[in-house]
Length: 281
Image 1 (cartoon, rainbow, N blue to C red):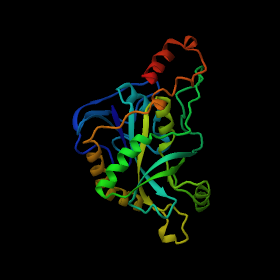
Image 2 (tube, one colour):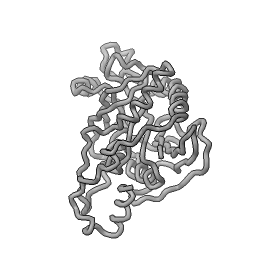
Image 3 (cartoon, rainbow, N blue to C red):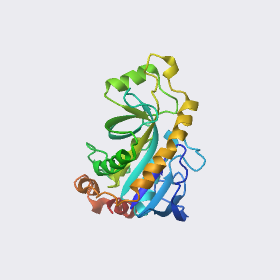
Image 4 (cartoon, helix red, strand yellow):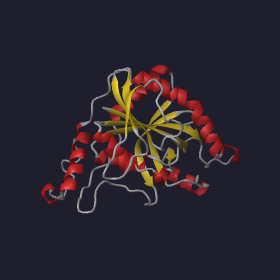
């Protein structure tokens, strides 16, 4: 099943034939909001508002573990996220869409980064953290619709909630990053720990603050203004892709825990075995 995590401005999904909303309790706390179950095109869909229904959670306050665990517990095996991003590359203009295939984690340790620890030792591979099949699926439909979408790019995730300094923006460019945002880490890595195929559609809202012209520097009001004007394009793209069969799941992702666990399952407590069994599905 496919889950969609909506970012800023996406608190519901137009075109989704809603069945019900589920309040899910997880061992990691409560998700950002109730999870909407429904149907869109040929797909059973789960939808979750990342920042809550009233956008009450800052990026570092989002309970990413609970969000991913809740989606997995309801049967999701693929995730498509939607996020606002700043562009660190002049070729990715404000209003363009971009789907990263790599991440640089520039957060500050304030977020719970993993399901594991406290007696459960697991080290998953995140060399290729994104589902190439999901990216190709979405990018192909964007091309058919004439929507500009960049792929093969790197997303730097910063802590926030403040917007970055020019020095930070230039440093991330030197790292080879093309996008900057605040929400895809640890979301993407937790999805891998849960053996879920993951990709995100980034909406470029600005050029961050690396350009010499101060008039091109990011302002929060401009971010949200351009982001909202781009949502129709994203929703049009979603309706198009969800009318088609979803791509196959990558075996490497769906078996990511097979060789990653060091602690014998026999050493787990009953509670640990219960939540670990959900990740293994």
